[in-house]
Image (cartoon, rainbow, N blue to C red):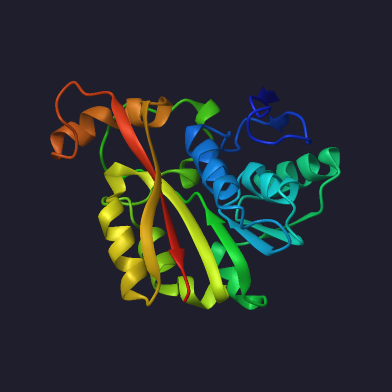
Length: 235
């Protein structure tokens, strides 16, 4: 069990504890939380956190004053982790096991956050293994273009949102940020990038770097990436 750096992420709840086999909070989680905080939209609103992992973004939404927070996560280990973290923090987060698509079974939400799997990779490629500490492959592998979750999420985003609702999605440049903006707009939302950050490669992209170079998604020798948060509003 490792303790993750979350003093910057959550003001009251203390550190998040994450076992091996659960995606640990990293810079993408932090950027998503900061975008949500800067918007001021969590307070007194119904929030859904999709692909929740350890629950760090859901807990941050609760700490920011959400009237209710529902987290959705497929991994049973991550669900147990998120529930423990919520209970330890004394924050009212309901963690549901299942795909992000389960959220459409509920009443539409005022705010939706999502840190989906987004790393492009050919499952048949024989490249370096990713360290176990990075979490399960299902938390980051997202098909050859990185959009296995992103494209259906963009298409169905309006179903998740109440009138005037907002969705925040974070992912890497390698999954095509412009395509996310365009996909959300094609679904009838008003979308734009609201936060960006350059970061060094973590363990997943370090292991995938040579494949990204081979397929032309990465310049030879570059080992940093641009993260972006896309915000889309239902108006």
